[in-house]
Image 1: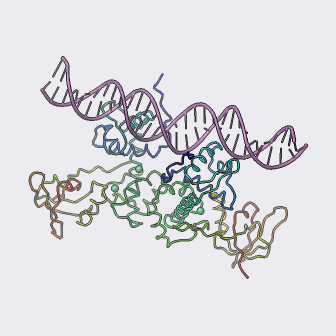
Image 2 (image 1 turned 135 degrees about the vertical axis):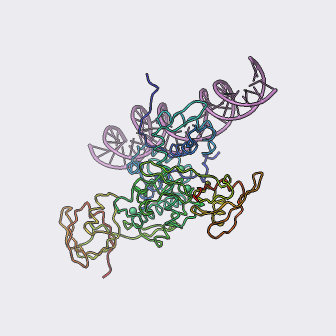
Image 3 (image 1 turned 90 degrees about the vertical axis):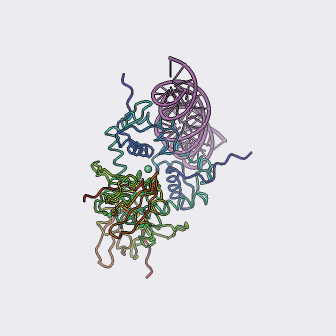
Length: 231
Length: 231
DNA sequence: TCTCATAATTAGTATAGACTAACTAGTTCT
DNA sequence: AGAACTAGTTAGTCTATACTAATTATGAGA
Ligand SMILES: [Mn+2]
Ligand SMILES: [Mn+2]
Ligand SMILES: [Mn+2]
Ligand SMILES: [Mn+2]
């Protein structure tokens, strides 16, 4: 007898949807998502994760290698990308049409993503003109489940002298996001790397075209994902 | 020893919020909401209602008279009206800003009402200009928890010869709503009652000012809530 | 190769919310 | 008043999801 699989098409619960999203993020670089990392990201105990991992692998959404970690199956990946699409369209809609600032959209989207219908999401996407990026510069997966993969460098690692476009801001922390906005550091901005202090010191940049300088500490510079601009 | 009250301020769950809303609707004419009516409206078994009733009275949201029914406490009424405000603002926002028709908003609002923040609701209310009525003509409670109480007559009961304003459409059924819209029977429309056939027969009306006649069967005429227009 | 720290899992418990089956209170009819 | 119907409640079970405490596997150092 086979090891009792579950109903292959249960409606996903809110918890399940959130687990799939964090597993996606933790394993997107190809590796396994570790139990303790999932637990930390969801603010839940490791045994709770072990329990959920059991259920998710029984429903075929993830692959579990005991003591090593988990990965999404293609079914799980599809479900995760659907949630990420919802989340990012919601974030953009709230900023563009309801006056939210980019520091506060995340919490709202985190709840709404589980309650909206596909129909509503597609209406929002239409109202936004089928957008490609959310307010933080993260790519929005298509309804078919494709997502843009770009090679980006953290500003903290960019070579001095290069010219960059700021593409993504890798945090949801409201205070940091507010600070970035004040400094004019939002996706799409062009800049050149002027210098970097040794021993994990700050990076100094010049905004293009204004030339205005900014000094960015290492912690923050690791959150600014940039693309090198071809000469 | 007292009969063990629960935490007076638990965050309300989705289920609890839906129970409070239906209890509000069932007891709004002053009476008690019966277990079996609550069960029917939530599509849940009567024992499930008994179980929930126990929890809700322990948290002080309702008053339970065994074998008679339940009523909301003032705390429960406040919570119910908050949900009704959310629901109706969502319905109106979806129709006004996202192209929904009035037959399909209900299902969407039924889920979203539990996920939106107060902040988002107030932003939608602002975008709508602090509206007073939802797409079906139902009054929207204020943020403070006040709701307009109007004396309305069902078209089925209106005296022949009277002039009426159609105020509310008392159904969420998509097919019926679509039909009403086709017939031009939407809140705000003026009409006069031309005649009524005996033995629960249809009511014939004339739209004002066009004079166009409509014959409305009893079942539908009971859903059209009207206000008599002073001569 | 053995030991130990760390990470992961299992065992056992709790709560919310649903269900069915069985029992009982209230009401209505004869 | 008693019988009988109806509505409501209790008893017992189930699933999802969380928790703490206890146990075990894995990989790094000695
Ligand atoms: Mn979420
Ligand atoms: Mn984002
Ligand atoms: Mn609801
Ligand atoms: Mn409505």
